[in-house]
Amino acid sequence: MDITEYRKRIDEVDRQLVGLFEERMRISAGIAEYKKERGLPALDASRERAKLAEISKMSAPEFRSYNGVLFSQIMELSKAYQQGVLRPDCELKEQILAAIEHTDRLFPEYAPVACQGVEGAYSQQACDKLFKTPEIMYCKTWENVFAAVESGMCRFGVLPIENSTAGSVNKIYDLMAAHNFYIVRSVRLRVCHSLLAPRGVKKEDVKEIYSHEQAISQCAGFLRSLGGVQARVCENTAVAAKTVAESGRRDVAALSSHTCAELYGLSEIASSVQDSGSNYTRFICISKKMEIYPGADKTSVMVVTPNKPGALYKVLSRFFALGINLIKLESRPIPDRDFEWMFYFDLDTQVYSEQFVRLVCELDGLCDRFKYLGSYSEII
Image (cartoon, rainbow, N blue to C red; front, side, top):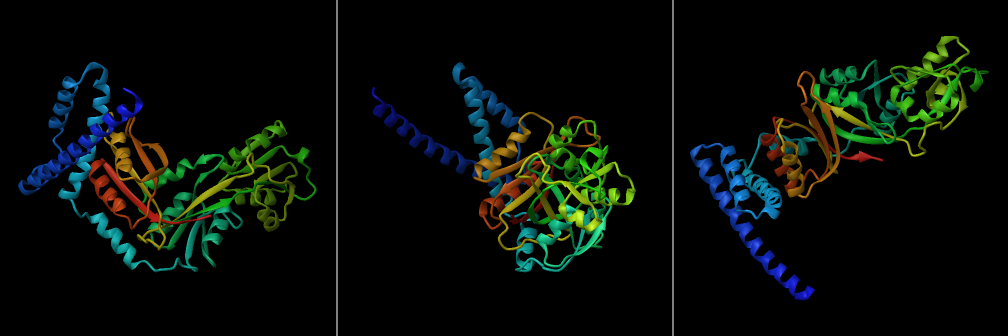
């Protein structure tokens, strides 16, 4: 046979596969109706294992592993389809729809906002980009920012979550698992670090440099070039500048912003010292209340999957089956639980789409723990 004949045979087999797959899905829906009427559990794990074992026995040796993958995926798709029968609605779906309906059409220009650091911090600059005139309450730690929002002391909080050079801010992800909040917006801020020192101090005089650990990581190449200079971690780049300004020492400097040089009376003895010219930090804006503003096209969720093979794959297969693009995956160990992980996902999906609604209802029943973190848009 030539290639045309092979392709004709493939097309015919595919037509049969489509028809058989759709018939199988309709039968699955019938099983779901049967279980729903009789109050039976949706998942029958022993039946699933037996079915996969039967498929393995039926398969030719060279196709056994392929059939295992194929039928595992078919079963996942069947369960996803059955969820629409068993749980056409879920509590989270109603909460999301209510948030869309009751959230103001415009993002507020004025609001009390908590951020970590002091005047001149990059978090403050992110606040200024998000709000026209924010009423900023400065907090000593990121945990204090979460607490200020949870307690109602501030309507919003602004926190760094990842940097294009240094990567994710792991401490934020750990805190997100421990606090109740919703992401309502995000913003990308170009971060340009300068070496700041008291007036008259030269670069060769500097023996210690203060900054936040993320800034130190972002400027690693520059710090190596100085040779023998000690990096000292502090809470914030603006705090670093303030510390240097108040130290009275002539052998210290700070990695901070040009804005902080002006604020704290320091000299900029080297500018743009970060390793990458395209150095951006992404900040999230959080709220105690679920608020979904028009244009929300990103969603963030956290899940804990069962500690067994294929558990994460089953979650990922839902995204694939529903055509939802996964734009970030972060994993963090769960404290006091050996070898168990929490997974954080950023999804590229319109909050108004049918696929999104189906996803949030399905994930709630699929995972050991599921936490919806919010749907929002991002300022660039």
